Length: 167
Image (cartoon, rainbow, N blue to C red; front, top):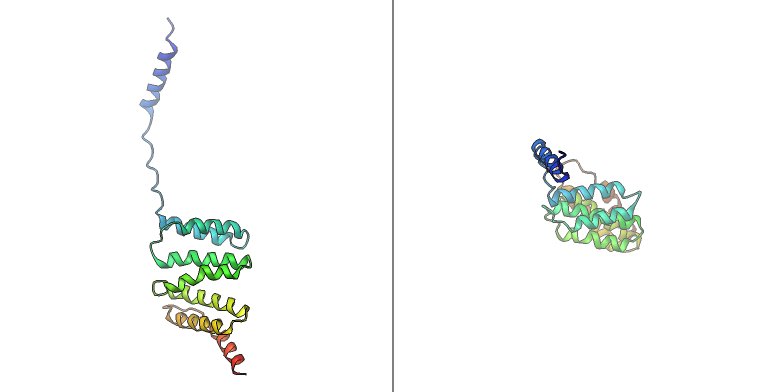
């Protein structure tokens, strides 16, 4: 007598269940902060080759919470860089200026370089007073960095603007 299809199927399934191993523990999902850092890194790699894709990753990152202001600021810095590549300096300023509102919480190297970028934008549009203001901040925060940090370009740009003003 031939076993029924239902019996064969149940025996097959039972045999499969008896031999089955418990599923391997899946790796824990990355924390929102880890995911944000990962998206920032991906955007950095795409920045020059595909700025639109980089912007999309940074927008995703900006939706995630950041454990600290420096991680948050890195997303904003990269977003500003995307806009500068796309020749949209006004949007870059919108990305960068909020970093200065939280400058006491953000690493001074990031504040310094952001100030220098902001100053360059103002210099390009001919607003020398704001350019000098932000170059001064770049120098001030560059001096606060605890390790060897090069802010000499901001010093030189500030000196040039002050010489031009003196003429």
